[in-house]
Length: 245
Image 1 (tube, rainbow, N blue to C red):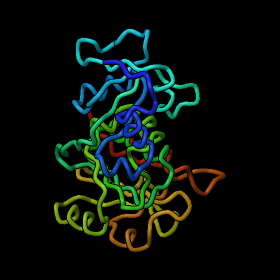
Image 2: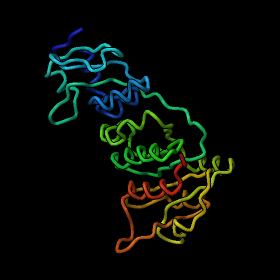
Image 3: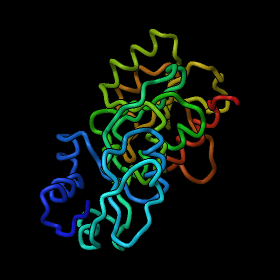
C-alpha cells in the first residue's frame, strides 16, 4: 500500500493523535524512530508501520510497512526535521509483576520529567508507576521519547493516589515521600523490599494530603541548593531502593 496525499482520511485521523484528546478517544499514539519502534514491536503494540518512500523497512521480517510520501510523513511527525519511520501504536498497559517497588508521581507536570522517571524506574527494577490524574500525559511525544521505550516494559496506571497508597500500605509496602521539611536524610531510612517512592510537582512538591499518608519523609542531603529537579531526585531515591541483580 502507498499513501501520497496528506488529505487521505487515514492520515488525517492519525495526525489527530498529536493531540491528547484524540489519543484518549482512540487509545492510540504515534512514535518515531527505529529504536522506539523496535521496542514497541517487541511489546506487541504496533498497529501500523509507516515508512517514507524510497527507504528500506528495517523491520520487514516483523511488520509490513505502509509506504508514504515525504509530505505525508511530515504531516504526521512532530520532529522539526521530519521522520522517515513512524508507527501507530495501541495504549496497551503492562501488568505489574509484583508491586513490591512502586514509583508514585503526584502532579508532575513536565512530560520530559515523567518520561525520564519511567525510564529510571525500569532501569532500577521497579514494578509499576502510579500517576495522579493531573500528571503529564504518558503518551505525549516528549514523554514517550524521554522513556526511550521503557514505557513498554513497566506497568503504568493513572489513579487517585490516596486510595492507591492506602492499598499499598495495607499490603505492607512502606510509603516514602520526598520532602524538604520534617524529613529524615534519605541515607538514614531503612532499605526495604516493599517500598513506594512518592515524588511531587516541580514547583509545589507533594500535596499535603498525599504527604500525610506517607510512612516516612525523605530529604536528599545536598550542599548549596535546597532542592533538585524531580527527575534527578527520582534517580537518587530509586537507586537507593533498586532491585538487586
